Image (cartoon, rainbow, N blue to C red; front, side, top):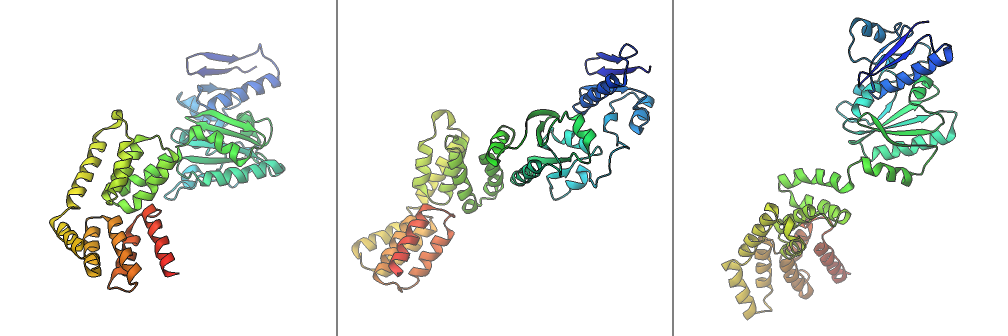
Length: 371
């Protein structure tokens, strides 16, 4: 009988020979060897049974890292599958139909993102429903998760090599190794909970969106995203400091001070000092000689609506939005159509960050005044 030799990564040899007679043992050994190949546990496999394939022929000519178990089977039905490279072009498509041709690419891809193998069948209603759930979840993580769908009606041998015994079966593969999985169906919430250890936290995804905005000093756009990130991870000092920087840059000095007051001594780094500097400069600019002169005039003639409007403009120029809104609203309470007060009021509200509490407060006040 032919001899089968498998060389392991630790130069350990596993041999199949005449002592193990019978087709059952031979096929079982080949299956186990192929499974090991899928996960990179074996470097070289030599077997006349596999030498008929092109990959095994290459092995005989050049004893290097080869994976004959991934050669296309001539006995399985053909399926309309595409390689991972074709499906992950300029626009990321993170749902892939798996075949012997692209399974190695998917395992390699698991080195830098989570690959979820979903083994399913048209004849299994639970597996079809689970596949829909997994598909919906994968759409929420296009950059960090790939859903690899294995149709077991077409790729029974591939399912066997992964050790699948029942349908549906789901496997999480990371760094070329299974890290989690389950047999049978689970709910959307249960699956998302399983995925948490292997995917970036939601606040990290927000930080990735925020960084370019901060670099371009797009404070208004960054502010609501930072608020969301802080709500998701209130204990993170780095998010708190970035939110304080954004608030200070938008002139919301009291909010920035409040945020900085929660930062512990151990976290008072260069970013903390930068925020303090921004606050100090903003406070100096907010108390200019022009503003002090207008404040003195208004104190002498508190009913002068034109002075109030002029002072409100000066406040807004130094980003004292709350003071500006308070003055303009006091004008609108006396005369809804005085000068440019209504337009100035609405313009200030428009430039405040989305979801800003100050904007919400004065929008409600204006609404009550109008209606």
